[in-house]
Image 1 (cartoon, one colour):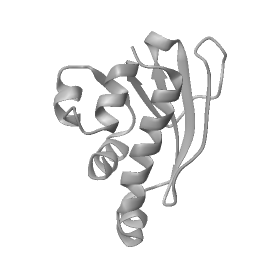
Image 2: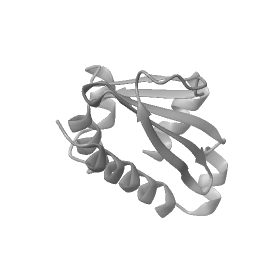
Image 3: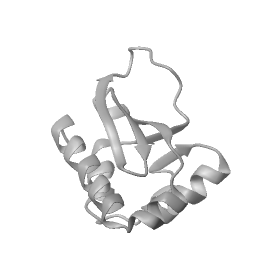
Length: 116
């Protein structure tokens, strides 16, 4: 199990990867979306917005505190979140083995695949 701070650092690494892409590519593939990353083993949810300028307004809250439904919901254990962020785990394999679960529209799934 990883800590909340390690998860925040992982989210920051993912943001760095997004921002490393040319702005023209980000604008082509990113539609502004509300995103929640649910981390059951920490009973925590990280809420943020995905924009062409990266992940913004990143906050965390207890999982039992209600919030508006996001457009994209990712459920992943803390250790897997950190491994994905550090490129030590293959995203496609994590999806296929259900270590990561993504609830989003098909269009959002395809766009996210290009970014991560």
